[in-house]
Length: 376
View 1 (cartoon, one colour):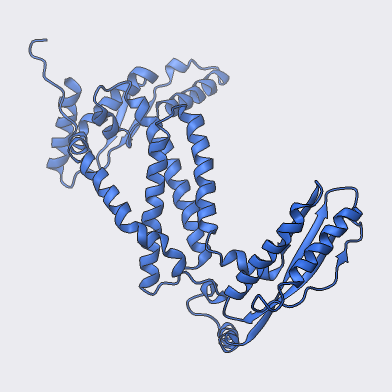
View 2 (cartoon, rainbow, N blue to C red):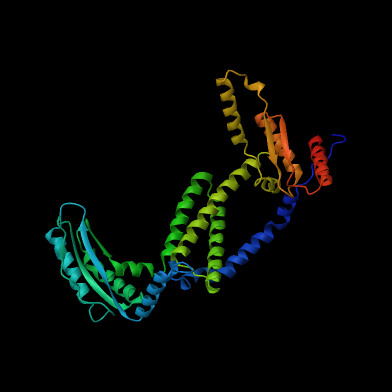
């Protein structure tokens, strides 16, 4: 059309167009370089009780900690409990024979596994549906390696008779020694990460219904976890106490936050693609996008209240206030105002510039720019 001018480019879109591949390469490089620090985080975490104490503990806590330090080199005995159970009907003679064979197999470990004592006598439950025996494991109070080695040996030995057990007979090794062994195994973070990956992957597949799109947010969340774990490793090496529990929480929190934000961002980005041809322009305005559905919902509330009060909803004027962030491009603001006016029907808008301009002259210049964009 004669005299018409091309729409002004969005500055942020131009930056996205120029920096997208450098940013992707920077993330790949960061993942490669930080993967070693991320995977070695369990080596610098603290599992003892001192990791959960305040920075400036009370006098009583300090005395207890000093006593624990004095006992750290002494021997400590923990108990592993081997349990066999059926869900209903009680243990049969065949089940009882399996339990006896398992106890004899564990007894054969005495003298071959460090710290392992002879197993205790068989103890049936009152309802006859379970039977257990205990095994004492003795080792240094400051070490969990003895418990881990002994518990793994017990589990390996009872697995042989348990494999010949009839259907319905379940077995487990529990107790303080088993808890210590599982906590110090170092694989709980892998289990947490794998569980989170599966859950989020299923959610993304259901939401996007695409064989490829779900991989992008998942890869971004994994990259965020690697960076977070590497940062935690650096903080631990710098002297900050990082407990095993907090390092596990890092996986859950970062994965949850990253997945939640990606779902919101991609949803808004796909909505914006319906109104803009260039992908960079759509992504540039996505973070500051106005939620038209929310405005429509609020308008419906006002109209319902007007009808209940016996008034014509069309007689109620609506003024929409828009807060513009400092340094934001004004052209996208005008575009959003037009979209809101067309979709919802609002005709009056108040643009707040109190935080965008430092002087009166700058405010006037911004107002003129807005009017100029609105005329195009």
